[in-house]
Image 1 (cartoon, helix red, strand yellow):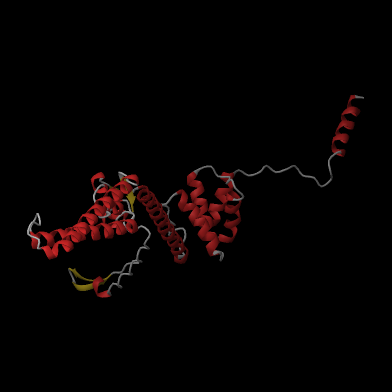
Image 2 (cartoon, rainbow, N blue to C red):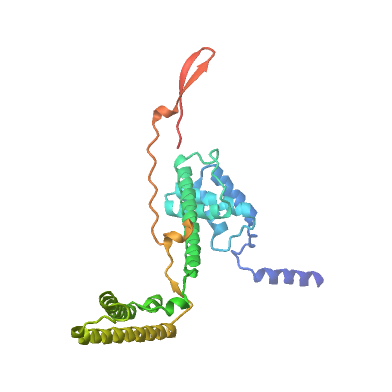
Length: 303
């Protein structure tokens, strides 16, 4: 009876399993997949290595936790993409690898294709040039912000505000009003002074030697002299009061670029593009070689 029950249990367990089902295989670890990808990569099997590296890195986040493994995987995936005809994709993977380790390089013993190494080196140069341009733009923006925060200050004098001839108005940056006061005060002052000088020169300071026939003329001139003098002082007081009303101890003025430090000048002017250096003559790389058996010439070059 007990044997029969065990047999029935076995039959029931097998009945729930589908005829074609197999036990699920355990998923391989990232380390095992990385080893397989590296083996195909080192053997030059780029088409086989590409999906293996891609599965380790995409979709984000990557399955690799070690920065060193991540860097190697991005670099190898870039080479695989380049060798399979995806140059733009290779550049993207190279940039990922260089962002993790700027000093990384392709081992020529593993990747013998010079064009792949050239593409990687060009990506490295492009990144360095872009980083320099971004750093310079950031630096120029900081300098521009610093310069914009600087203001030129022109100090003002209260004494000048009380002087005649519109000097106070000119100091207050009111050139039109200053010109009017200067002209009016100049005319009245000049008229009064000119008549006084004429009368003193002709009749003396007290005008005690005025001929009878010149009496009316001299009296009229003296009235104009005194009137223009009073008008001058009246205008002077008016201009002084007006200048005092609008007086400010200092005002902001536009900065003079020539007074700024060199690094703060011409920040908005585009920098001139550097000129390409002239090609180096091949003769500069010819080097004489002296050996125990003779004399020769060595030829060298630079990339």
